[in-house]
Image 1 (cartoon, rainbow, N blue to C red):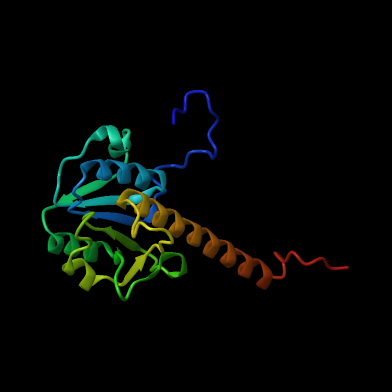
Image 2 (cartoon, rainbow, N blue to C red):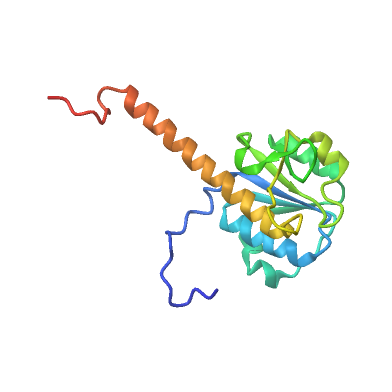
Amino acid sequence: MARRNRPALSPPRDPGQRHPFCLVLEHLGNSDNIGRLMRSADACLAAEVIVVGRRRFPSMMAVGSHRHLPYRHFSTAPEALAYLRRQGYAPVAIEQAPDSQDAFDAIYPSRPAFILGNEGSGVSSPFLEAAFLSVHLSMHGWVPSLNVGVAGAVVMYDFLRKERDRLRRAVVEIISGHPALSLRQTR
């Protein structure tokens, strides 16, 4: 979708005000998916993207977002996990697993690292074992899963929606508990 003559739907945010989550892309087989997910992560102002395994991706699919979005590369899952721990991220596997819960019902940690695995084999054992939480997107049709790029975007936007709602509730609690800020009318 070209942006040439269309007004922005919302004002651009300062890229320095990134959200407290990152995206981990583990051994994705289709390099186009890396570019697509980079673009979605930038659209959601993810703090960073971590690519495990494949180093190259077509920048055309990222539409330049890779120039504005911090990203790192690690060769192995243990290297990436060590980095996530140092940065204070809680791994959240996006995987259809027996113990996973519906992403729309999940309560995410305050600093999640959303892990997306290979399109065929999924998230690897080291990431699954380290995961604070595993989530899936419920499928209602014949196809048992979404494209990894679509699934990652849905989960990131769901996280942002939940964060927005959490902040709104906190503001209402502060306002309703403070007499000078109360919205109640007094006569």
